[in-house]
Amino acid sequence: MRGRLRFSVTGSTVLLQNETKGHNGRTLQIDLRDGTAALIRSDPLPEDSPVVLGLIGLLKLHGGAVLALISKAKQVCAFPHPVFKVTGTQLVTHENVKKTFRDLRLAALLQEALDHRTYGQHLYFR
Image (tube, rainbow, N blue to C red):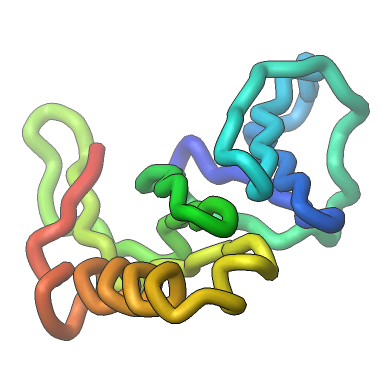
């Protein structure tokens, strides 16, 4: 599978980089405090950094942001490019999201919506 991403979480900052060899320094930096994203240059993330298959989106809430990542997928067809069905997701949240009932409820609804066993059973990507 191509396009795997290494990621790192330090405080409220998430870094995402293409896993391929010959890292070109381009890194997506996401600030979970305010939900901003920027393309920056940085050193390669360590080889033992967690790996995900893709980014679903970034949801800005009152107390912070929630980053939705694709953690597992299986190939379902190829016409002419491979198409994958999402079979696992991971949410990365700012700590303040867990402090307000409204944000916690919205994050839980997002997690339920992305769950491949229920509403998220029809999420595909190429």
